[in-house]
Amino acid sequence: MNARGGLLGHGVELRILDDKSDVRTAIELYERLITKDKVDLVLGPYGSSHADAVANVLERYKQPSLPSAVSKVIWQRGRKYVFNYLAVAQDYQKGALHLAKQIGVKRIAIIGEGSLFPRQASEGALQWAKKLDLEVILLQSYRKKETDFTALLEKINARGAEAIFSNSYFEDSVAQVRQLRKLNINVKILAGTVGPALPKFVEELGSTAEYVLGFSSWEPKPVLGHPGMKEFIQKYEKRYGVKPNYHAARGFEELQIMEAAVKHAGSFDPERVRDALASIRVETIAGPWKVDEQGLSNREGLTFQIQNRERVIVWPAHKAEARFLPMPRWEERPKE
Image (cartoon, rainbow, N blue to C red; front, side, top):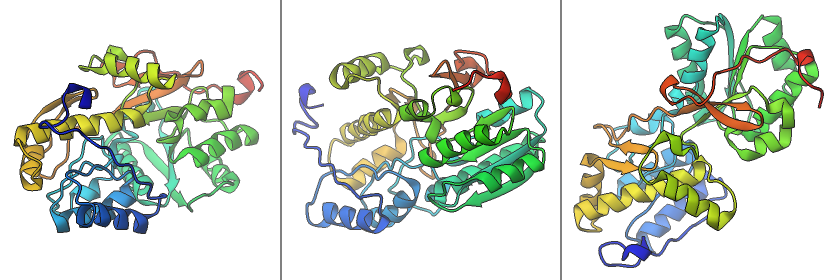
């Protein structure tokens, strides 16, 4: 941005503060940025629980932002200063559930950690299961930082689930896949949410990660055809030596949208920027962005599968790179 002359003739200084994944700290940092540091613009925060709490601060001071959060409830409280740019949690398992229907799965289990995002993802999975006429034989949450899923997985197996939809983070998703193999519990689909999208998921699990489904709001695949995407991937890879994941793309897209809003407003005035965010349409590296009267966008996201240790898009069909493959039984797979 600064290489292109900055924003409205001003150089942009980016301040990054660490909320240490603590909601109270996040609230205090945003209070400070707005009232003491008097920044012109704010972005974030990351995570649904944090965004829901910080949104109250943003509303109080009438400061618009684009939180990196996906729980729909954040935008259902009548707020005017928070704007969504990601697929909502309720749709994270949409693609995986459609794939389950396609291969004839009938009995499924839905599990997830008990915090805001996984709860909303589980609620959405339940709604989609009902629409697709899939029988939910178990709907259960587990405590934060749970590591032993033996009893839960054995319960799922005893009830005859053909597929598991786990609304999880990294550590719990890795533990679940590893323990499924250890217990020799076989399902046709194991679909995670956040965990499988991280490169370290495959690094940690190796070939055990094969066939797992996951959700991503963006993948470094120029075939998706979004403007500026190829250039972003090339520059990121040149600077950091790795391809960008969806977290990197989220940050870039946030600034794309905010830059467009400020230019449309012709000012850093929060009210004018807020009005611009509520009305403009922006072409981003993740596709076109525009929000409804609640501040929600209509993003759908991507369902991928780990195949040959790579994430390949398998849903929606018009964006798929490869055919979805049901999970073979553990005894049919190569040993670790």
